[in-house]
Length: 128
Length: 128
Figure 1 (tube, helix red, strand yellow):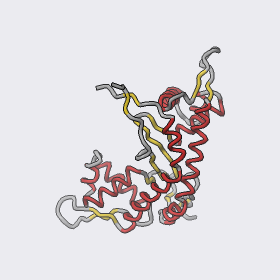
Figure 2 (figure 1 turned 90 degrees about the vertical axis):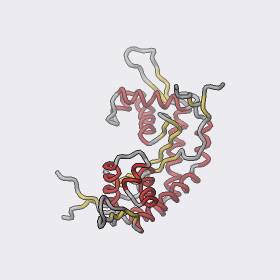
Figure 3 (figure 1 turned 120 degrees about the horizontal axis):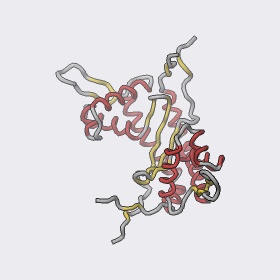
Figure 4 (figure 1 turned 60 degrees about the vertical axis):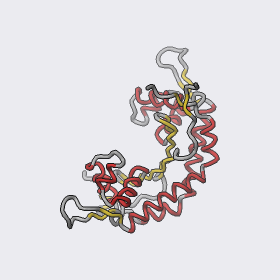
């Protein structure tokens, strides 16, 4: 058997990140977290499915909410316990816009990315 | 005086990163390091001007050289001391291609990026 794994394809190789300032970052991890909050209605659950601590997920939400001129995530504190959370209209817009930007970027660089992929070394199989 | 700094503009906000595998990453920091090696003829000097330790710079060069099917950086060990380093033809191609991809991506997302920038909160002036 060949001791290498297949070379990666263009899918999921590119990561687009916007650094608007210190702690004012919009990148793939934060977008996945926002999307998870929209899906689960919970910061804790969204963090958990990414293997992220509750504290870390909260910190990222606070940073995201302070990045824009309105919050991306709205917390519900009315009920018992930690309560739920949901995306605001701006939060949904940032997520869908980021996904569209990633797709537009991928299209714009597709030919060059193929050229890079063609020169990749085969990746060694990790031991075990 | 207004206690905020100007909102960032589109310039230098976007970071394009390619994750080809574990430790097989091409992103803005590694590209800057390669460019610095091309400029200075030295891994140590290129790392130093980025505030990077010699060990860290070496590790990144080793990872970059293992990412592709040929090295991006060639070391000269002939002389005394640590010797110099230079970019190979592939190294120069990866740097210029990455810069072109960043520019193509920036053009493709320009309208959406302006929409995000328009919704940024003003950044508080850091204390001190």
